[in-house]
Amino acid sequence: EASRRTTSRRDLARNRHFEELSPEVGVLDPDAVAEAMDADPDETLALLAELTGATDERLRALAQQMAGRLVVELGRIGHLDRRGVGRLRRVPLRDADGDIDLDASLDAVVALRSGVSTSGDRTDGLQVHAWQRPATAVCLLVDRSGSMAGDRLAAAAVAAASVMFRAPLDCSVVAFAEDAVVLKSQDQVRSPDDVVTDLLRLRGFGVTDLAQALRTAAAQLSRSTAGHRVTLLMSDCRVTAGGDPLPHVA
Image (cartoon, rainbow, N blue to C red):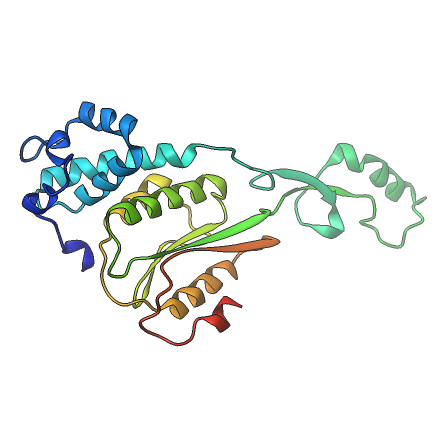
């Protein structure tokens, strides 16, 4: 419902760079966008985020496509710590389920078959290949109440892309106001492009129920087996609905 609210070309023109990027109806100049990104990436990305809600349908579609691509590219920047994500490791059979590692388990198998094993545990010495659990799980909470627009929307989209590139198999993205909308659940497979596109469609709307958002984050992270579970909260934390959020922070 909130995404149906659009911004007229007249209102968008209040930005001093708007006509440079969109000289006429239905047009978004990619060369002008590239030059503006070189000059002032923060302001340009904030303007593109505003254009994703333009009343002009053609301009809106072009802005969503371009902003999404730029945001995903920015999300890739930096060191990607992939330790513990989607890797096979060799562990004792008693500690995990998996396929037997015949090379590593050969001595134990020979001992068992020959009857010379001194261990009471018939699985002792058997090794398996098992998927290593993710080291860190992340839930990103994005406040989409009344003030969600422009630079805040752009920052939220970049944060979502960054989280998804750094914890792709164990992350969730939740937009909240009076209620919480899960754009990506903890164990769901979605591309960063799709999640960023959904985020860029959001418009500021409603009150802020931070307790509800934190309960949603706890529910998402409870589905993870990671040893370290983190909630990232993007909000001014001015609670205008719901109960006291502090117990849920704990």
